[in-house]
Length: 607
Image 1: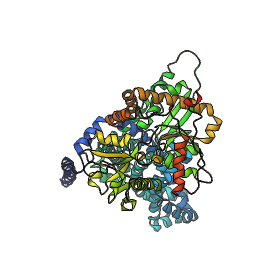
Image 2 (image 1 turned 45 degrees about the horizontal axis):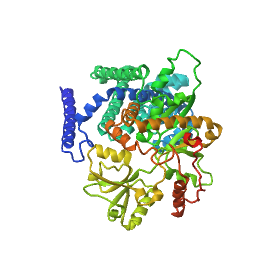
Image 3 (image 1 turned 90 degrees about the vertical axis):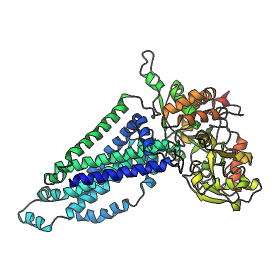
Image 4 (image 1 turned 60 degrees about the vertical axis):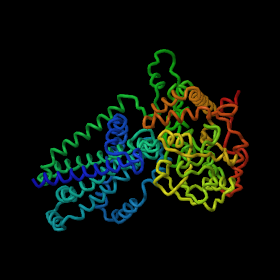
């Protein structure tokens, strides 16, 4: 009865939290879509279960491999450090220090070193799980009563016999305590690793949901990740009761329930893995309908495909539609290319393209400028403009509007913390006759138009084609002005396609073939914006379809605009912006004229 009462109180506590959450959401203090209630989250969970199940398969695979390696290495390290005191003295401090290094700090380096495949993600999981296993076992070994060791030693027992009959049994409890921590770290570590780039996984899914303002999906993913961690912990508890018979009385009341939980977890694993093998993955951009049809060809010689890696600058959005169209409609295949489209780490594509882990990517003229103003410039070249004119600017709420730059006097701007960005904002204020010193700047990378009403800032920088259109679709009344309306220098190129310099020199014809396919994709998006939007949503179903469709319509006439051909970069506009950077002392070294871009690989330049 006491246990029943305890369970009842726990359930009641959870129910009360859910009711309070639903009540707060119903009152709409931050907008219902900003703080969806449990009912909305559960509905989203059900609606998106097939997609969530697919992404879970990738995350569980990474976690399982990393956990298996981490546990094995931890066991070996603990044995060696216990057996040889010198190793313990040398490496125990290293283990402690390793846990003070933020995972998110080293994870981007792993992606640069090892690429986007499974390896860097597994390494992150291994790093996360190795410590609790090693330390748990060492604590267990050191907790043994010395009298037991002396007894076996007096009986002539070998080190192996001491380990088998004394050390291992005594350390088992500590091992399972470490394993409980390790299994939860394995899921969290895999999710963090997925934030840094890739095609699949709950971390990728969460990032896409957040950046498309689908907060109900994001909450559903968080709850799902929590449930997976709890199920894995339950499995460890069950395993502990089976391995340690003397503790069975402690788990006998919950063994059956834990078994059911473990069965549920295995069902998730098998269905997730089955969904990866048995169907095409909507979120995996590396496969397309055209590629699957390749296996159906029964006549003629199969064309040898050149594999390329293309890394985005952000989560998939309408800046990238032409890429996904070229993938879906077989334009890449027609050129003999097999392109794997990868979601980038937080700091974007340039470092990965420069390192050769991707041949092509997406970036911006402004942010890559400092990388060109060095003794050894970043070895990448901008080879095409995805949008002809800069569509970024400042947005504010209509109820507290910033109609023009001068209106920012006395107001607060939420900045990304970039010197070039802040200098541009101050420049347009000055050009508009205002005093930039009266602008208050705070750093808030998570700032958005949707949280502005409850925040202490009144303006943020947005790319109107995505954030501005999203605000419109979500019925947020806003005011927007583009930077280029107040200073023509700020009509620079953003976003652009970039390529690895060595790859361009060694494979010029492949670069031209790639751009031919991409040009076809963007021209299709111009002529068929709604169909192109459907292709993008099919490739990234986490996106809000209404936002994608409206954004696609907005951009349809802006991909080429007034340029003589798709992708062209005007040297005067390019050089004007970099001249301004140097004049404003935002870069230490002057960038030579016409440096960092070329039009020579574009189809239009060859006509």
